[in-house]
Length: 238
Image (cartoon, rainbow, N blue to C red; front, side, top):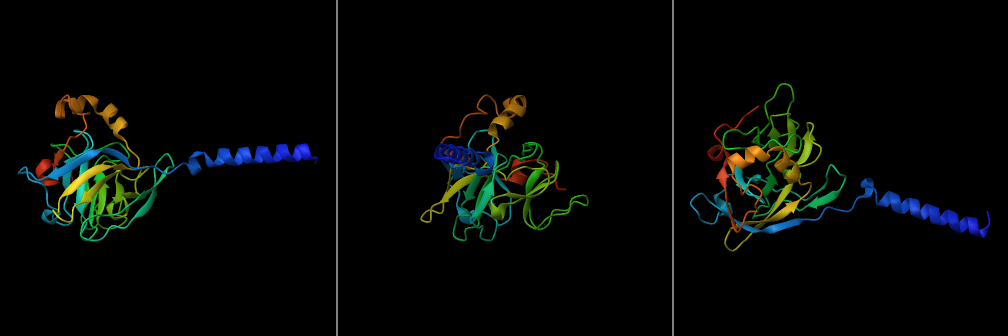
């Protein structure tokens, strides 16, 4: 091989390597997306105190849009930082829980498979204390978020990573901050694979009836937190 052929060969190899690194297998990390700071409130219109949350209990608020529900959980144990990947093969570092015990976490309540979500009438998805009871799909662990629609299971202690079922990625994380001085919680953004566009496309008519014309409007300043059993009339257990 002469000098010219050698240089051309090296250039071709470098180009192939660059193309490989830019492909989905080596996609850049997903960064947090800011939707504005939203203070979490209790049902009486007062700033929610982290100490008022009961451990291993489903709480729901809406963020970043008026129609997109979020699970807020006190797991009762520390939730550690976890490296995760979206269905588009983009990696991200979930920072773990916040609060005095690093046990407070929040995730989009929209299932990553068929976009099932809790409504005021019905909810097929929720956090389950202990093992989910389902003869056809045994639980892959304890204290998981379980969707009864197709039995996807997510571990909220590790960034809502998928442990079982057809879901292709973790639940989108909602980032929250804990103020040690006031014990208040603030939602600041999202991290991971967002499915909001698909969600609004699939449920456009339904959401317009449930929420009205502001379904796609971002939440401003405050969002009310309620227990799932108070928000939803029929939480399904499977």
